[in-house]
Structure formats: structure tokens, C-alpha cells
Image 1 (cartoon, rainbow, N blue to C red):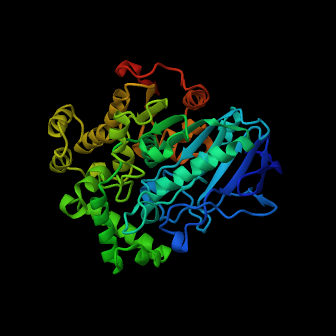
Image 2: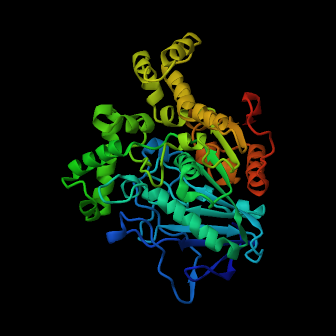
Image 3: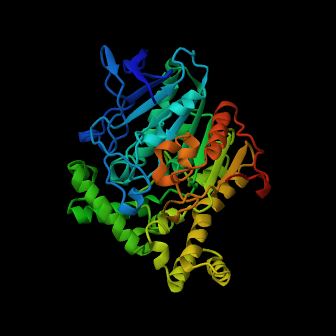
Length: 475
């Protein structure tokens, strides 16, 4: 936004009236609560409606973020994050070109990534003003992260972070027409954990009817643990904290204690991913990167998302899904991990999956380093193969598949994880640390236009997936 004037018209919502910002004809309403603060007894409960307010509430500044710790240094140098603690962090932002449009404009709801433990809706490259510029009402949401959102705890509802996302979608259904958006033309889109969330929402019976299109950027449909395995992670946290593994005991914790224990558990899992200690589904799904994520609880998720989708969940919802060509370079090369991978270590990592050792040998014979081979194999295992499998399993409805291949020069991550985000949002100016000092605007124009077109019509501009020839490549 360039020229800002606090002259956006007040808008009525189910909670009360809000005023916003007018920036060169793009109207922004920021930090609107869609659920009550998850504090005290509500910390580990399902989301509840926010308290209504009298008068006009200013929605002119971003709201607080979910409690979290910052990224480690190598990642923080590439990927922006903002942490502002506050009770009212179950909030959302709305950007619209015309609040008076009478509910006619397509709507896009952004679910941020961050391994279910980091991120927020106030990161600069996530600003939805560029979508509003092109005729879309864009909404960015926060949700509970880490232990608060995804730990499986006795007598607490599971998948609280997903329940937050569903509550936000209910808010959109009930309120977005007041901002000019069409509640019957809603696209959910997300990246990484956000894309895994989109798969969960496609699969969840509780989200049925709340959106009409979906976009998965660098995700998969496998991100759900067995509840018994998730409870093992909770038990380890309780052991570290010297408390009982109950909702009452966790509810008495301070934020700092909870985040410290959460970080300790994540590190222990990364250093020793023993399935007997952590549970097979936690180890296999988390891949040493995630320790807390959705669970198959029988209510929010009745099956693994990809299994439910294969069985027909969300079959009537057009899906746009894809991956980045070098996803795992972001995790391995930027951190120096790839350089430290020996041939023996690579064999140990890849030997746990089908064809892993044969693939490793072929890549080593072709001159790749062990670290490069691991990065390539894990990119396929965690992103491209499961995304393709979802596309092939959807026998009804349409699925459009893409691969992002633009190479960032930063830290040699190339087309690594998250690099596509500022291209999708057309916010290259906000992400030079991630995409380099001279990113190609042409790629941003193409991707952003495709996402806008998909939200408006269900067609991003290329054929629905039938074979490998139908994959749209952005380079």
C-alpha cells in the first residue's frame, strides 16, 4: 500500500461495526476477531464466538499473532516472520476493492504455513491488497499453533487449530458479503502447513459447504497422526514440564514454559526419530520437521486426508495443487545440512522408503552429492508424489497441477520451499531475502493471474490433470 487514508467506510459484522483503511482505493480491515481469545479455560477448548462490541471498532492495524518462537537463524535469514503476542490472536484481515459490491466478488482465504508451529497473517508478503487490486476479496487468518492448536491432550478437543480455521470460514460465510465478497464463491488457499490444512478441510465433514474451491501449495494429504502417537508427544512434553498430561495441567502453564517444552520435544524428535518412542505416524509424517500436527480424531478428521479425498470427500470442489521443484533445498542446503550428509547417512534416510536406495545409487552414479540426492528424494516423497497421487485419485471434479521451478539465488535454495509465495501474491518487493534482489516479475504476473482466474472461474488457464503432460510449469 502506498498512500493510506483512514477513510474506509464502516462495515457491519456479526460482532459489531469495524472501520478500516483506504489505500489508493484498496480497502483493508485488519485484526478483526473471529473467535474469542483462547486464554484461561478457553486455551484448550473449541473456539467460541467473540464478544460483541458497541460503536465502531478500529480495524486499522494488524492484530496479535499466535504464541510461537522465531525461526532458527538460517531460515530466519530467508523467511520473514513477525511475533506480536496478545490475547486476541484469533483474528483475520480483509482486503477488498469495493465494500459496496453487494456480495458479488470472488473470495480467497489464505492459511499460512510454518510447520503448524510458526507464522501469522501479518507477514508483509501475505498482504491481500494485490488480490483486491485484481477484483478479489482476500482474507488472511490466524489459528492456534503448536501445543495450543495441535497437541492431543486428555479431555480437550483434538485439532483445535483446524477448528479455528473452520470457525474463520464460518465467519467468512456470515460476514464477507458486507465487504463485497460472495459467500458462495470462496477459495481456500495455503502453503506448507497451510496446504496440509487445506487437505484436511477438504476431507473434514465439519468444513463441508464452507468453500467452493481449494489451492494446495507445497503440501500433501498425509499430515495427520494416529491419536495414540500424538499422545506420546504430549506425554514427553508433560514429562519435560513435570506435570500431568491433562488439559487442567497444561491450562495452567505460562506461554514461555509451553513454548520451551514444545521446542525441546521438537529437537529431541529431530535428533532421535525412534518410532517406538514417538509413534510411527509422528515420525513418518513429521520427517523430523514437525512434531505436532492434525490427528485422525474421528470428528474433524475421520481418516487421513488423502484417504478421505480418494474416497470422494470434496469431490465437487475444483482443486489447484502443486509443488516447488527443489522443496527440500530450503531445509537442507540453506541450513548446511546437505553438505554434511554422508553416503551412509543418505542410505539410512532414503532406505526407509520404497526405491530409496536404488534412487540414491543412480543419483550418486550421475554425479550428485549424497545431500543433493536426499533433497531430491525427499522433495518427491513429501511433496510432488503425494500431490500427484491426490490429483490421480480424484476421479470426479477437476484438479489442476503445477510445478514451480523459478530458481532463487539466495543461499542456493533454488526453487526451494516457500519461494513461490511472493510470486503468487505478487509481492516480490517484500521478499528479496527469499527470492533475490532481481526476481522475475513475469513469473509473478503469470502465477498471480492464474490464482485470480482460478478463484473467479475455477480455471487457472491450463488443462485439468490427466497425465504428466498436464502439469503447468512456472520457470
